[in-house]
Amino acid sequence: MPIEQRGVDTIPEGERTSGPRDLVSILLGSNLCLGVIVFGWLPPSFGLDWWASVSSVVAGTVIGTVFTAPLALVSLRTGTNLSTSSGAQFGVRGRLVGSVVGLLLALGYTALTVWIGGDVMMGVLGRLFGLPQGGAAYAVVYGLLAAATVAGAVYGYRVLLAMSRVLAFGMTALLVLGVIAYAPDFTTAALPEAGGYLLGGFWPTWLLAAVAAGLSGPVAFITLLGDYTRYISPARFSSRRVLHATWLGLMLGLLVPQLFGTFTSYAARAALDYAGPLVGAAPSWYLVPLLLAASAGSVGNAGLMLYSMGLDLDAILPQASRARATCAVAVVATACVFVGHYAWDAQSAMTSFVLLLTAIGTPWAVITMIGFARCRGVYDADALQVFNRRARGGAYWYRAGWNVPATAAWAVGAAVGLLSVSLPSYEGPLLAFTGGVDCSFLLSGLVGGVVYVLCTPGAAVPAAPGEALVEPASCPTESGGGRA
Image (tube, rainbow, N blue to C red):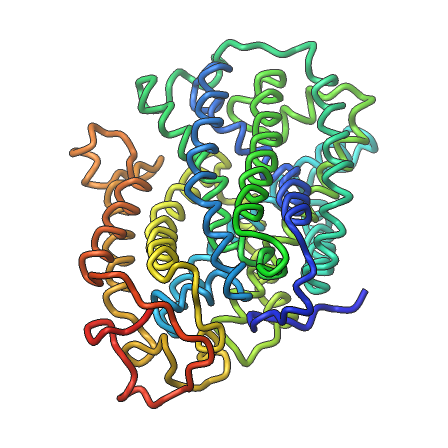
């Protein structure tokens, strides 16, 4: 299969051959991995019992999916990825906000997937063959996972789609075997080793779990969904079918692995760590299936995240090819794996990462969706590519390529989110007004959206496809009736 040549340029109609079933396959198959499974471990580690953990994961995932899934329709209309598509709201240069947010999201999840997958592989190899658990062995395992991930990401969308189709069936079978393997030791009681509720009370801890384990899953896809829907033709498939496929893919792709992680956490008594107890509690007959799940699943998920990172870096540095950009970010992601393994506590690192990225990513997603509603899904696809061609002008030029009101609205929303977040090592000053409950994602999205609407009053006029490029001085700006 040839290496994909497309970066963030517009996908021609003739190449948009995927469909809603492919979208479900890639969202399900790529997420059946330990990098997603481990998020189901967070609620038990916070001190919740089985039913509270399940309800927090389900509630957070459902709310996040309802909020996130409509973003898939943006790239269905534009034919390019979501970061580039957001240029309609932020400007053709201002869309770099989305590229940076997407790069950070994908970087963190790639590193987490390789980190957790590698740790489980090391534990299984130690039990099967007595492999020493030293630094050199970890370096080899992490390196092999990273190399396999790079190969899939460089080859691109078609290879990742084929891999996801296989993983959707193979990983489901491995997880079913896992339920059978761990069932004898399962308990619904809170794990005593967790030391009680992490935040001192039930509801603050439950809400933290709903955000960190549930909501964070769909939010991780706020810049990724367009990587797949840009290959679906709006002439062949309606927006409703694509939206339903996105809902189904996200719900199955996130709830199945996360609830497996919650189930195995109680069965393995994994209160303070997940990888070690998971391997230690596995019956001997499940070690080989667990090794397959840790390796194949990690490569599938990390490959998709790395592919997205390559697109985001390609959007930031148009002169770099997608393949070179993918290899560059792979080096950074691998370095983050080693830092995570040797320097961070897994629970604190995961919680801090998802809460911070949710706080800064949510207002960007809200503004992008408000813009989509305003223009009624009609975009000037050619004008979105101005920055990639190193040109100037077009319908989305605004002020020197930046829509200042939209960018300022995102910055204000992100700042409010960061000031109201509750992390293991930091508590924002706005927590005093929310009763100590982390409402960062709600406040950041609400404030960012309200500021954007107030600063850009009136519905935007849909862009006319094919509008010629003009010099910046004669382009419309937000205050002068610019189109979004």
